[in-house]
Length: 364
Ligand code: ATP
Image (cartoon, rainbow, N blue to C red; front, side):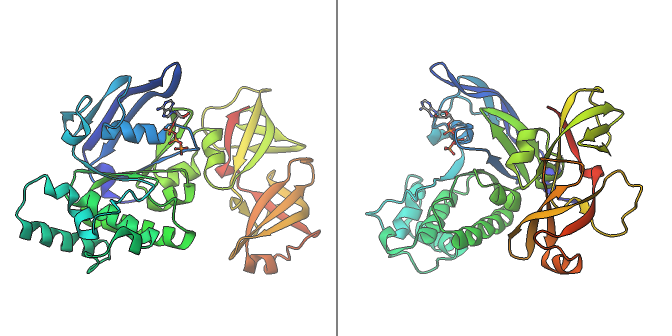
């Protein structure tokens, strides 16, 4: 994200103290969020965390119980959907089955009373944009799921909205189409510069497309940050566990950023120190380990036995029972080449050092 100019653009959409209650159930609590012009933001979180509700509130399809929404300086908090400026794509393709592809795409334009020739030209342009030139006369049932979502995207973009809202648009597609289409959506979004919010529960999807990710849990925002920030500097144990693979080690704070874990003493990175004697949890990514040039006096030096190996393609995860840290096996990532080089095999012994500069420590 370095040098990402979208991260310096002015605010386009602002949510201020948005709350949503369904009866006595609080679905969203105190949502404050500023999205910049041209940004691609993902709302990411487990099922039921409130991400769809938040998107629907932005669209005006749901009314917030409290709070304000400003789009491009305009207070849209109480505007009906038709008076807001957005295009939306839903999870289910939601095309009109009895309308041709051209008529589906033109749907939002018809109300604008444009000349027919102009509508036809715009439809051609949009279908080309989403990679489906020449499919005007087809019907939704004649198209694959991925193609239907492209049509839905073309329809959402037809009026050149200021805001593109995507509600799990890829989750009904198979894995290969999903990855392909998400890259295309991202490229298209860049090209058009349209401010975009995508709801997803797929962390890999969010990491790969978003300028910034809003991680949600139980109706609150746990963290807002770039994919790298979210991955490297999770703000809470929930974020650390929800995004990517992570090791969790129970430890005791010893003050001054030192922790005792089993019979090892590890020095965590700077930050607010936990008070000495308090229980802590340490999080460390499987790739945050050192294999070369190990120092005998490094407190983070570990030895252990390989208990399990999981092949992930180019990489493997090896689960290591570390000497001195009983009952808390550590997963380390090795490339296939490193597996050979360091002779990592089931039942074998390995040496490594934990990259304690990458530790994230939280009160237990
Ligand atoms: P999912 O990925 O499963 O759609 P989500 O994060 O999008 O999850 P929401 O659909 O926003 O979650 O729902 C958030 C919470 O609000 C859930 O607990 C849900 O049951 C509740 N909820 C949503 N809509 C309503 C409604 N109309 N009436 C009552 N409760 C609702």
